Length: 95
Ligand code: HEC
Image (cartoon, rainbow, N blue to C red; front, side, top):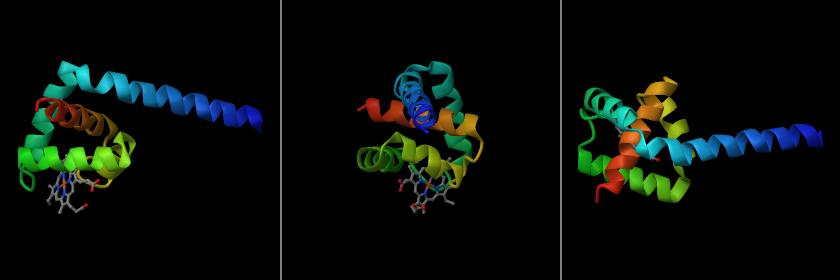
């Protein structure tokens, strides 16, 4: 039981390190994310509103929440979801 718990914690921490470090600096991911957001999201969200929504969401619920949220919000595929989040975190940093 403890072993399983420890394994779970290890997987969790590796995952969060990846989310925290890999996402924002990856230029290719940001480029793919830009195109995806244009195609899938701009119909309902302008860039300024996306920036606000993302900031609000991350500060209140963390980045992990967005991964879950986009699964049922126009980005069910993991690669697209992660590219979109790279793009979104990059426009927050732009300010
Ligand atoms: C059909 C219109 C529509 C499309 C397309 C759409 N959204 Fe949304 N989005 C909404 C509405 C309405 C809300 C607020 C209600 C809600 O939480 O669902 C929202 C909420 C959000 C939020 C707030 C999340 C939170 O924690 O509450 C984010 C971030 C977001 N959208 C990003 C995106 C992204 C990125 C895409 C493209 C992959 C996208 N949206 C596509 C209508 C849309």
